[in-house]
Length: 326
Ligand SMILES: NC(=O)c1ccc[n+]([C@@H]2O[C@H](COP(=O)([O-])OP(=O)(O)OC[C@H]3O[C@@H](n4cnc5c(N)ncnc54)[C@H](O)[C@@H]3O)[C@@H](O)[C@H]2O)c1
Image 1 (cartoon, rainbow, N blue to C red):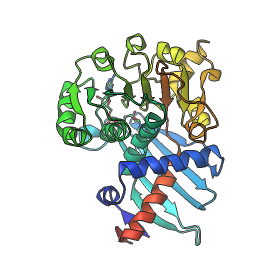
Image 2: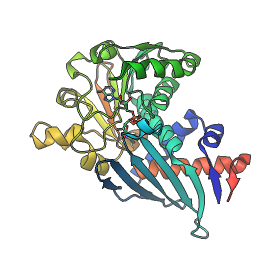
Image 3: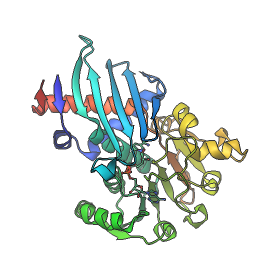
């Protein structure tokens, strides 16, 4: 069995590798070459949620599971809010053959979902970005955005000014390498003003900006919410979007408050969702057709992404002799 920690994963796998891995995972998902039960979310008292996310990739064949917890008070203990471990199972013997740092893999693959969606949906000449949230996922979200579009500036907003400053401090060198300057935004409206690409990756239960302030032609990645009673996007944004894409229709329709809250009020219909990102990649559904369109990508995450990325990381690690056997 191979053990891989976060540093070893980073050594063998780049953001570009992760975006390619997700492209493969989305295609497999949309071609139904996978078996993915809706994840089990256990509410663990009032502390947080632990989710069990298994998947089978039929053509590999490979199975695996990610155990992931979201505990929003963890940062007070110096730990990430979202922590995970990913296991893969050897198809020849049925034995677990890899245990990996799922916290790192989650950050990579979740950033890469936004990266892939931005690559397909944002205007090609996008110049300004905005990032809401500066927690554990934020660095990879920023890196993904800058990997697929040549942005010159990204505004950073968080409810904590201190966290904005610390994030800019830690991420500026990576952003500069990819051609962008990071600028602190004092308010949500300042962050979205003029933005061509926006990513929301917060722990907020309520909309993080006013949809009426959006520039025409913006592409939005909504990442933070996976609970039916929470949402990062307001009703205006989801009802005025020209095209809405999701990672996995079944999961989004059971977990994404962005749609479920206005649906319960009769203000939004599932028919307004254009389809899954995998079908866009396959060319089965239309993407952006004008520079003016408002496009939205909503992701709640699903296990195909985790198992495919873990499998691709394992192959590279074995080829490069990285990791320890146990
Ligand atoms: N879609 C997916 O696949 C996926 C994967 C991983 C994590 N997530 C979710 O993404 C969210 C962020 O994850 P994380 O690990 O970065 O969490 P985190 O707790 O480390 O960071 C969340 C950040 O959001 C900020 N925030 C809260 N309200 C805000 C607001 N209104 N405006 C701007 N910033 C605000 C907080 O101050 C904090 O800095 C979590 O809710 C997590 O569950 C989703």
